[in-house]
Image 1 (cartoon, rainbow, N blue to C red):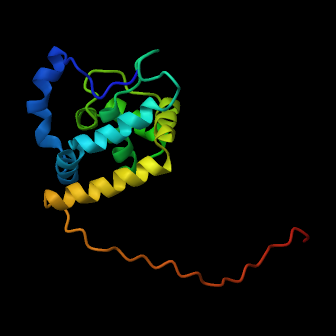
Image 2 (cartoon, one colour):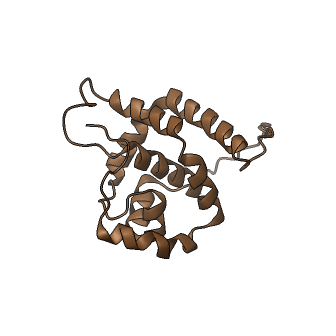
Length: 164
């Protein structure tokens, strides 16, 4: 069963946001503004609903779309593996708050990999386009073009010989 976000907060989550919000890094504050966009969440929600034929209404509850999107962003910003993402989010209260997991259980590395795999390249492309549009609207980024040099150079490879 697919959820958009966790519905009920615990007592711990009600107290903690005021305390931990000062510990956020600057990029997290800007990303938080951009990731609150409903269109972004809807694209992830739709992708999770297509995972299995009746997964939208039946079965165990999946990780909410909001948490999936924020875990993906954190993983790619920090350039972590799935295992590192699981370990860091489980241990760090600031990351728990950013990903909106709170006191809930953090998805393990295998589950996280499967969740991000369900998005697929089309949904990732939609997310990227929408992220740029929202960032421009909220004046988080100017939206200039980025040029990357992918020039290939020829290199001479010398193979070592095993004979002495």
